[in-house]
Length: 128
Image 1 (cartoon, helix red, strand yellow):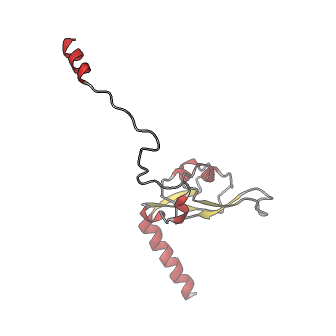
Image 2 (image 1 turned 45 degrees about the horizontal axis):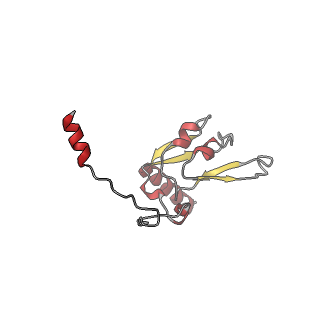
Image 3 (image 1 turned 30 degrees about the horizontal axis):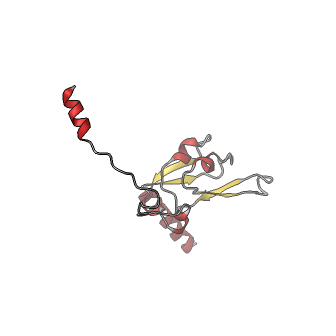
């Protein structure tokens, strides 16, 4: 107990800096991810089977990057929102959309495989 007391008495009190005295450092304004394509470090890409989608908006609600593209008032959905795709420029591949989808129409595919399929599809479109 005596050793603890000696240690405590040697601690000096320091004055904390105020908010105006602390340097800002590397501060980023909120919402700035729209200015940067951050999807290029994704390992897995979500793909949506649109014919299975029930437009429940669970993917849209839970996506931390706001990467699910929607039409807010779709004529096709009688004025309700409609999922139309994924913003791959900002999607990080976290798979939350896939895990919350009640009909499992969103699947995750390795980015390399998805890019290869996309390239093949573009090649077929150019030939046809």
